[in-house]
Image (tube, rainbow, N blue to C red; front, side):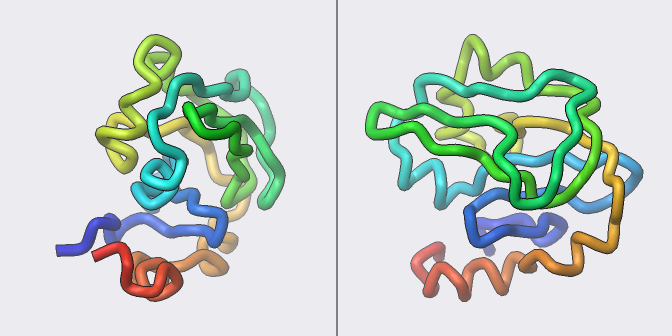
Length: 130
């Protein structure tokens, strides 16, 4: 079984966006959290913020480094994962589930076509994700 959910789309910067319905969630991939190490802080945008593809919208701080998070798609932030303020380590334990970062209303669903499928993302990682 794949480490990466099939109903997600992925970026080369290691973010994911869930696909389906009017709203989508955005997060960082399991590969990204492994590279970062123990995550100690997450900086997220406010509800109502507008995201633009490729633009930084927040950051993740680990014991190793601070990394920007880039929007895979454009849209309006409808919700942020408030639980991460108290338990940022959720990103390490469940990057594709409870570790989601923001929920957005997609401005242009066509942008999803420019992102990688799970199989393409795993190939991009060079098969190291298995």
